[in-house]
Image (tube, rainbow, N blue to C red; front, side, top):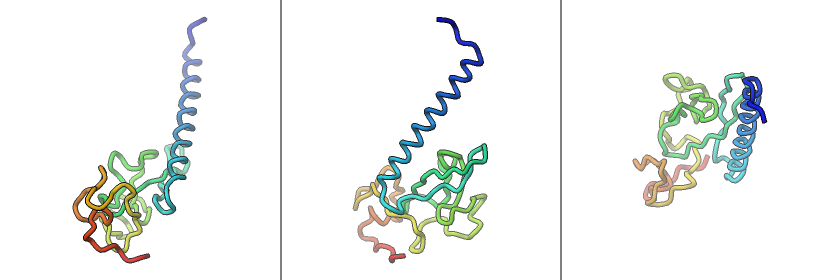
Length: 141
């Protein structure tokens, strides 16, 4: 055995990073395939190299605001955008979408909340249609 040189180490690091990225993409695809239709939207952002992101982003009805930003935006590319219309978000939605869910937004119901039992992500402030059973459901789209 011999020690690896800097070029060999860099090559190994690139190969390993690509392998991890493929595994993560496969894991995300498997998770997204198990979700019901309409449970997420695709991130409209782009990665540093210019490639479209397309990460599946979930924003259940009544769970925080429509600005996708907690923790730095999209977890894959970091983009900030309006979940309602997918427009870039810079100090507000350029299309004037409401900041929080209302009867007109198309945010899906939370798959983890149940009546009287909010999930860990729920604000539990009365806006979640699932864990607030006394609140009337929104009209159908």
